[in-house]
Length: 593
Image: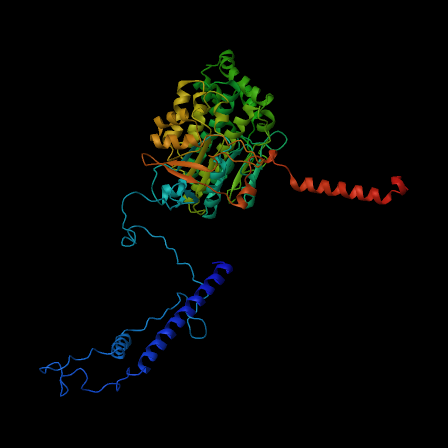
């Protein structure tokens, strides 16, 4: 209650109190005046008045009728009846003024409690319908009820068990807040001990947040840093540390991961997948390098060319050359040419040298920043993203292997795969590589969030098999989150997820553009910050996300369209000082002295 309202209430209470006292005083004075009039008291008449007596009462023949009671007698009866009733006294709702009056300055608002229908079934007996989920990171408010909605893939998989796969797939038009919602999940999960891994930040959207969390930011690009795809990284170190049979198993897994990554680079350069016999040759070359290489030094891509040129017996046996040099060269030359295309092509500067910065397994958060790669360089972007994912997921596998051996604490991870459409369009067969890297996240203690614009990103792939596999990303996701999408896109998504007509209309309305503002102020699109969360066949949960000032400073995807107001103000101040200094040096008539 404001001070003005409190004063108004006090004035009203005083007036009501004065009226109550005046009415009570008038009532008392009226009762006392009636008793003081002549004949009004108890002794104003004798005991024979109105009673049959010698003077000819009503019971005597011929007697005069008994006189009627006088006015004082009626007044007396009224006074007696008034005295018998309790006196009504007005009590202000906030107490009397003065000492001992119980005056209350203001009323505290009642305490609000939140409970389930099981805990407070008597106070809230409405059992129909379903409430908002309260497990996980606080995301926003329910669009219709205003209730708080919480959720993220890890908590809904481990604690609430709403989903069977700790993964999220998000679709929406640009500029509606997809990255902002995932950024909130990232911050909330980091507060609970989960390690966020942003494996390929393209804009960057998450680098500042990771720095604020005390995490590690690694820059990849020409002149910025590189990744050695043959480096076993954290998995190799963990295999040596664990030793024994478990260490050998981890070494074999490391070999398979390196083989898949080199095959992905060759697929990007060729524009088609590798042949099966070429993968066998490449695997033999990697085994040879691991057995004959220098301890403590990871091989490089030029070492692959050297081994192919030398042609050791282990590699020749895979090619089935049978001692014929021509047959051997015919088998390895296509692979040799593709490796030369990597080294001398657009990928060479980034993948031919040693890893500039390794991922720290103990970091609270990790972001691999590839925003320095140009938008038009699709091959390098796809290769850098795949290399970052391979290195990051290898770090996750190493962490769990150390925890299984009792050498490190158990940690959970949350990966963010933003702008998924860019590596998907780089080359045919990339879908297989992404699918191989991310399909087993449930067994790896890993939650992931994949972000793209529409399902048409998958339709643009080259083959029907790739398109079907890309659709499988959505079908296997435990959570599907939709921002504003056109109606045609929502109807197509409804065939995969299962959307009602009301949900299609709701999300389609969020894709409308903002109105034509007449005031010159910035108007946001109506769908910004609004999302629909779908889990299986359950009804969707529409939410509204309102970001805080801290989030707004850390996460701004339009930094290059934002005016640096501080720099403008500083430039204006310098110009004003220069003008003042020039005016002070000028003589009469404005001429310089």
